[in-house]
View: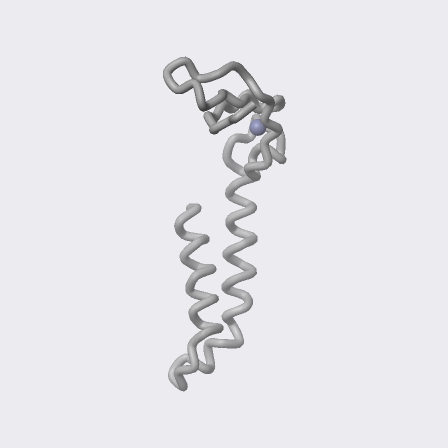
Length: 93
Ligand SMILES: [Zn+2]
């Protein structure tokens, strides 16, 4: 679904950029393509992981710094305060 909405947006952008006579009647629809694809993407993001906070579902996690990664001391674990999603990232501190 994510790929599909991305494809719809891409098609819209391509339609906007194209100068081809053949596609000119379609260019009026191009903005609807981009807008529709974006809307679709947000909607699908909100529909999956229903249990999570809406900000987490859109990918805006509230990461909190955790302990260092044992096998890679330059990296640290980060855990989201809301949904406890974990990620690893480089850290100097
Ligand atoms: Zn989260």
